[in-house]
Image (cartoon, rainbow, N blue to C red; front, side, top):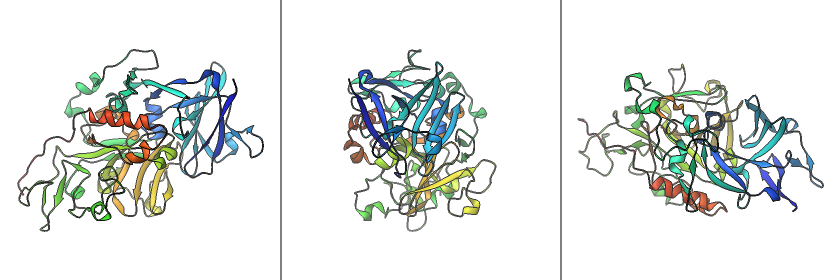
Length: 409
């Protein structure tokens, strides 16, 4: 049986390769990896690589193996035996090189393939024990009518039930929990802390993202004419008199951010995110910039002025006025923001420190349970069954926004 050649490229297009699959070994059984190394080195809630036959190939007339250290890719050692390669311009995670049984083995990031049909068979999730709460696996339980395995560690290890939470989380006292949400990339160049919602969180205006209203909605709607504070859950709005009231309520239904208020989080399946990360599902949480701080700083994070930007961040303009921020050392996707919405920032949830609240951080985040961003784009992809499975998964979980608490004005 002949080999299969597939072209792969990153989002910006400066890194173009071919990879070779041994068709006699297809499809490969794959499990999404949820280990701390994968989450914090990519910024994604899970990741997977597909074995390829030899190193990546380049060439216009004839293909030849390439030394990735001489390309526009940056290598980062996630462990003594594993090196990840990402695009130095757009941060796309492209290849993994592993030393296994004294042999070099190569893998390509699955999200870079136009289609994985016939190449992989997704069988489940692994290393869930490191998430403390199951992470993305609770949002992706079935695929093509088949229940996905939930391995505590590597494939074949103990299986964890749906809804599992570690004893460490279940019995951890609130007294022992840090009242900030921490996040970091694998190399530690990016270390962030998030504060609880407060008055400043609700003092800004921001147009709706595609997670709330699709990008093809009327511009007049996407501009958020009612000034809804959609990034807060339960949501609220600002009246003409400057009062915060319940969304959907009257002008006298006063409210304010309180101890039960959470931030909105959800998933995106657009092609930009897919090619910019190397994974099919980009998971984000929405935070006001006034609530995002570098560890050790008393000032909100700065993305505009070069002098005050976090030193570890590198910026990529994915389209005019839209910016993706990533770690220049380990390549982890970190933030997304755009000129039209500079005060509410998307943060990659794979960076979240799981030790206090779990990988999904449900004491802080209210996950969207009805839709994913750019759903129509994902459903048009050859891998649409994965998007459908994700939709089914999030619709089966309970709403985590919590009941509204009314406070005196």
